[in-house]
Length: 298
Image 1 (cartoon, rainbow, N blue to C red):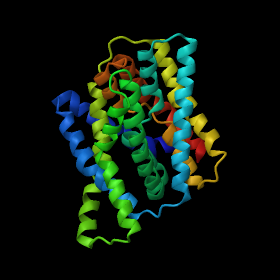
Image 2 (image 1 turned 30 degrees about the horizontal axis):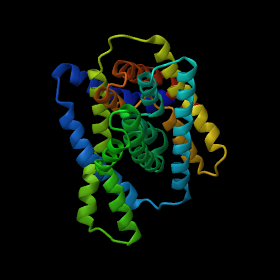
Image 3 (image 1 turned 90 degrees about the vertical axis):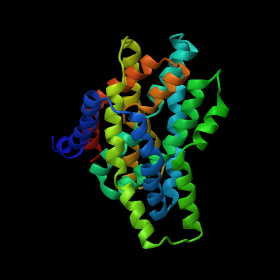
């Protein structure tokens, strides 16, 4: 109960405030999310990569993430073949079970649970997962329509991608920013997590649940909230990692479906109702699964 009150509850309260605000005022989410994507998140990402001493742990993080990605895709393909699902439904299941909400949900949970060092790892995971989702997510949502070309374009349109590149160049060439610049960047970066949490609550308020396919939703919940963290725990066993990074990776893998995938599903007509349903239900059910996982990991 202590973990729930200190770590999970504050996050849920902020989500709920965004949800309630959107139900009440019907704001333009696109404007707020654009502010987050183009201003706040790049500032946070730049500060993290500018200040962080990159080492082998970050390479482990990249390798881990790709192994988990391909394992989850493989599981979905096996399930789709065995149950004779259409390509569209297979794409919808991949969107809703492979890509986790490591940004809006995972980053604040990890910040509350593991402090600043865990949060630094979480921001790196956030950027990596966003790039992977913008490539592989778009590819699976749009296959047969736009495919790889659209996926590459999607990655190149992400401002945080360039924030990482610039920060790494500053590190490699030992370029020191003046204190006024770092203070300004930090001021903007500090608002990122609250803003993206509120945006998630607003996005959940906009999800329209019409027709529930309970067998597919149950499958999505099991894969996203149970199979994914179990796979993550198995993968980290074979790496020599910082114990804190191990915990951050497992907790990130246990996050509900990424809200962004609903946008891809809508844009490319990849079972949008199913993806929205799984996103909503996994977010609700994660309240029951995150707390015991944090307790088990310590």
